[in-house]
Length: 240
Image 1 (cartoon, rainbow, N blue to C red):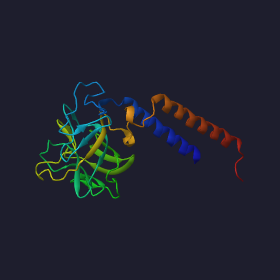
Image 2: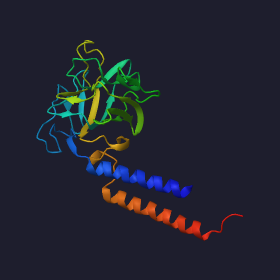
Image 3: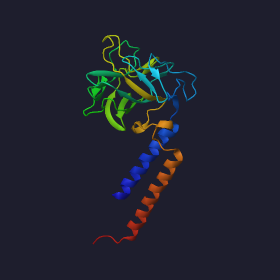
Image 4: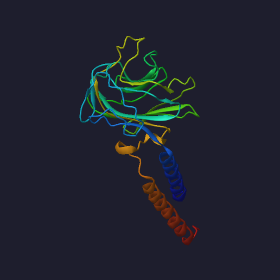
């Protein structure tokens, strides 16, 4: 049984390595006294009245930044931010240029994609940074949301509600609700990948995906353990 589990772990590691190795970081806004894209697109993020500093942007309600020039059905969005208020709905990502109430929210401390799914347990603490990762697979239409590495929500986006169409707005609420569902706060970085990363694990300067060489060593190590166990199993007499 243990050998089978080791083989499964090896396969999972190989799968994650393949996913991360083939992913491209297409936008990387580090927001360290600069609005430029470190990934090299040449498209700066739009600062809508927030205060840009050495470690990010501090924004009032509905002053969050905007990413332009993207059209993606498969992606990973990653952002590290904090809200000053978590009461009710507070929009995190708006996909419809403020024309629809749908989108990614905090709902009283829980991750929510309105009007599809809400996390069953608490996700956020007011005034405390949280790493939110949202992935969408364009083939399966599966959308998954993570907070600090823990999966919180999942739904099948058959209506293409979460497809990225220019522009992509952060921390700005929509016009149908009078832009009331927003909070002041701060954002440390925003990254966008062209792949739905397995497990929502992000790479780049802020992320946690090991380099491919590291995964290769891990897989070799797991394979070695499995081979050793098989040899021991063959050398051990069968139980009578």
